[in-house]
Image (cartoon, rainbow, N blue to C red; front, top):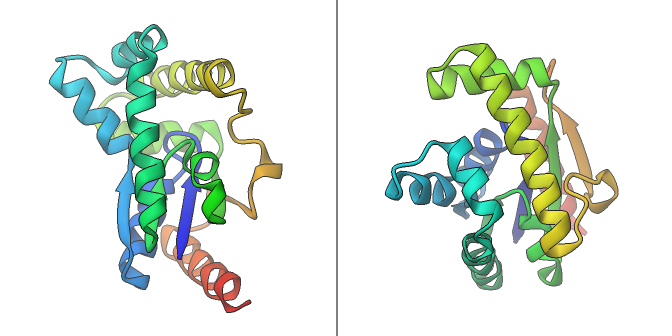
Amino acid sequence: MIIAISGPHGSGKSTIAKAIAKEFGLRYISAGELFRAMAKERGMSLVDFTKYVENHPSIDEEIDKRTVEEAAKGNVVIDAQLGYWFARKYNPLCILVIADKGVRAKRVSERENVSIEEALKEIEIRDHNEKERFKRLYNVDLWNIYDFHFVINTSKISKEKTIEIVKEIVKKFYER
């Protein structure tokens, strides 16, 4: 079982991915956690590191190589912007999690302990940068709904209800 969950920052993908990994006894791999750790190692904010990575493709390559390695092992939930893309040869269940920008900013604000304005600026910079960077590096249109089996908008659904929906999707997908 390989499940790839993608989506913009603050959409709820990590919360869902962790819950699904726990529910089904799967490993949880997060490209975002690796990205944050790499930023911290360099003493950089996420926005500054995002800008830095624009000119240092080896960082994306390292994260993406790990994604492929983990997908190849199976029994994993991959929480990554491009997890669905790099795991595709292993036929993962691909889920895109989206949410309105205001909802996302509120979530990032709470998670990062910054103002909503700062969070909004951060997600706008990171979203724009990643879309352009991944198009340039891999010719991938990030968050193209046609690359996914399911798209879930978490803007008006509780975390608990969203997790229940995804549990049902996983069960049905792997019944076939």
